[in-house]
Length: 460
Image (cartoon, rainbow, N blue to C red; front, side, top):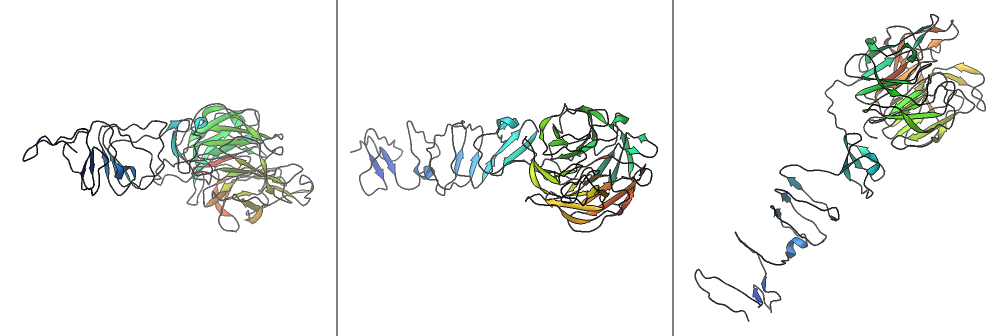
């Protein structure tokens, strides 16, 4: 039996080495066992105490101050948890149940690291801070995606056009200009590239920067800030000098593909850094003038001036060789550059076509065709409409927003290589022909182009 030294008004109740039950109907099993609520304004417990209602995660609120909390692993549902002060959870600890609501009175830190150190426990919904990209990212159960960290205040919606050649004058251009994609109108001067030797550059962009790489004799990469105006700034170098390739990008990574005189090279850069391009992998064909476009995770590269009609697929966030996505039968594709994307559908415009599926490089003719694919499934290209004229359908450049696709310039080989200043646009979501948008500042072809709101943005 318990020893009661004194009981009464204002007394001290001490229990030592005995069991006492309060509210129990049988023999108590602990030194002090209370069935019911315990209320205390100042209680000191020395030794190991078990809070069964908290361990079972029943409908109770737990409020932690500056203390060491040792809770055995239990499953169930926990109500509100309010943390005031510092609480440290060791790396070996595991929470097997999610919280219905977590209220923090100061700050909350997620795991950090570079791309190569992504946590191996890739639970759907896991979140971390990527130090390489300076962004939050989360795991979808299939891949890592970035959390958009910008607020669109209405300034986005610019397409950038850079470089180009003019025939019959033979002039090489380093000019940069832009259009507002939501309206109609002529291009406006932006600045200059660093060299006229970049007259046939590959263009790509995220929502902040546009990059233009390559040229007839240079491996230079320039970058500009899309929301402002100004000249190109040196970014770094491609792995090799080449013109007339194509570019595609997600919100963080840009990939330069192919190029004349026919290479299967793919280079990549991290858009918000500076430095030379690195090898990404190889195309399945020699990309002499391919077109390309992107979703947030996938890149599509069309066939080129070669003996096949392949459409290649790559995963932007990883490195490796391209794999076959589908075919663009009877369509050579050579002479077009770039493409547009809604994020789910990618299209490319014009170029050369052939009626010989076994050898698309033979019997070439200019085509007005606007063709494309759905990113979510492999398959052959589908025709969505036509450009205004076949006369200037080759050596044009294309880019777009998630709604509109744009085609810039081109030339007519039947009229002494005469160049055009035409800008055309089309609605990517619906089938239909292109319409006149406005004019470039000077007629030219083999231009590089990029846009700050294309369908590749919104993830890796």
